[in-house]
Structures are given as C-alpha cells and as structure tokens.
Image 1: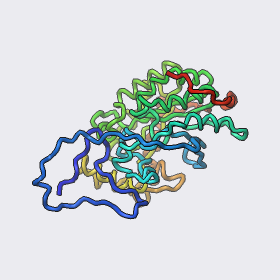
Image 2: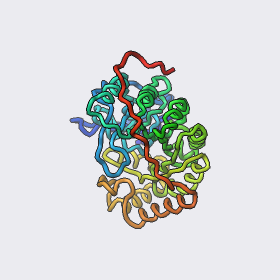
Image 3: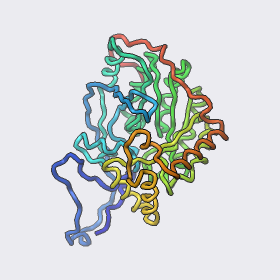
Amino acid sequence: MKPPSLPRGRGSRLNPGDRFADWQRAAFDDGWADDVADEPDHGPATTLLLDKARSVIVRNASPDVPFAQSINPYRGCEHGCAYCFARPGHAYLGLSPGLDFETKIAWKPDAPAVLRRELAAPGYRCQPVALGINTDGWQPVERRLGLTRQLLAILAETRHPVSIVTKSALIERDIDLLADLARDGLVQVMFSVTTLDPCLARQLEPRAASPARRLAAMARLHDAGVPVGVLFAPLIPAINDHEMEKVLEAAQAAGADTAGYVLLRLPRELRALFEDWLVAHYPDRAGHVLSLLRQLRGGELNDSRFGHRMRGEGVFADLYSQRLRRCCERLGLNRNRRQLVTTAFRPPGRDDGQLALF
C-alpha cells in the first residue's frame, strides 16, 4: 500500500488519533486501492473552533526559557511546521497532532476582555509576557481575525513589556504598535529562521513566510526602531545544521542584534510525525538524522529534562554551542542582553467597549 501523499500546503500527511482516545484509526490495504480513481487533492481547508478563555496569561517556572508568563491567542497553527513541538498539545482538545493541528484552529474571541481583567487584578505583578510561543500569533488566520493585534494593543495601552517570537511577515501590519512599545523599551521581536533555502523551507514550513520575506520583515521592524533578533530553530542534524552561520549573517545584515538556537525536540506524537516527514522528503538520510538525534539525546529521540531539552548533550551539542558563540562574537551579536522595562506598567480601567484598532 502506497503511503499517503502530502496534502498541498500542509506539513503533515498523517492525522493519527490523540493519545487520550480509547481507540485509534489505522490505514490498511484492503485490496481495492488500485481500482479507485484518484481524486484531485486540493488540500484540507482550515476550520475555526471557539475556545472560551477563562484566562489568557499562562505561567511557567521553566529554567530553560527567558520568560515566566506567556499568551497564545490560538491553539493549532496554519504554518504547518513539520517539527513543531506544540503539536502534541492538540490532543488535549481531542484532536490529532497531525493534520488537525494545522487545519483545526482554536481561537479565543474573548481573550482581549479576559486579558484586561487579568491585568487589572489587584494582585497582578508586571513582568514581561511572551506572545506567540506555542503557536504563531501572526499565522495566516490572524489576517482576518485580528486577535493578536487586539491583545498587542492592550499591552501597548497599559505599557506592558512583551517579547515576541514569529516566522510571519504579517507582523509588519502591527509596526505602529511595536514602534510605540519600542520607544519605551517594552518590546523585542525574535524571528525564527530555520533555513535560507526556499525549497527546504517550503517542505518544513509550508504556510510560513519565505526566509527572504522574514528577513525583509526583520529589516523593516529594525528600521522602525523595534529591537529584533533571530532564532535558528530548530536545528536539525544533517538537514539544516550546516546553515547556522549563514542564517546568523543574513539576520545580522537585516538588523538583528541577538541570536540563539534550539535543537529539534520530538515530544510524544511528534516523533512519529517527524519520522514520517523524514522518510517522505529525505529517505536517503532519515536513519542518519535519527541516529544523530539519539547521540544528542542520550540514546533517545527526545529528552524533556530541564537543562537538556533545548541544546542536547555530548560532543555534537558542544560543537553547536561553540559554533554559535564564535559566530556571535564575529558578528557582534549578543553583546548586550536587553532587559525589558517593567516600571511603566499602568493597569487598565474598565473595558468600555471594542478598541478602535483598524
């Protein structure tokens, strides 16, 4: 039986059941496949699901990330990145981490009102909030929903510091709010750039902005006074690891003054999904890639331990860290670690209607 073809514009060709289900679905050859006429594949459409938010600020105590609280306007992401560590989270919605993750997007229309309420709480203590960590706040559906812009406008109104990670050029739409925040030292935007090769980018991140478009957006934000940086993430051994220096050089030329990298993580269902992607696109080196990952992860394909999950361990992990450090020294990156200002925060008043944003 032939493996399923990759749906047009999507990152996964599989849609396994979630790990909490009492039963699982599997394809098998019943002998009739060759007699069924092939139908044109237009790719699955995106479906929006309402996600009523009790709270929008999520707190964490992880020593591996430089933030203690975050906001994710959406669950699921149309970018369809084959490597996305957030895919397994879709199982908590009773949905598949495969195609469901990139085609069934949960959004929180009441998130702006909830954010206002949380920021106005008497016991709230201002500290930088990360926007768009699990899923990209500027993914394609944001163009028509404008949910991330509404949240960003509230953060600007209350002078609340925010750090952003995105791979979308749509963030240029909000340059007015970002520049306003930047004037008071309240924002930093990190662009995730996985490769400079447009063919590889299309395979890995089928609905994200092209690498060239991301760099152009980075330059435009920089020219507007918005601090920008680059994340070479994820680093995938034998797929894109050779591009680290070139990506950092291109980002520095576009205005980046900070840089970092994250090793590919394969939690839960993502392991099988990424292995399938490897076999589909790089059958000649799939085994080698997985072998290198195991060498970086103590013999496993994933290591969730704090202090290990982002960089790995061993000879190859040390080599990657040395390459990043030497490249940053040569390019003048990471010379000054930016601290976002928290003293300008002013709690919001009562929500008296829809913000005039557009």
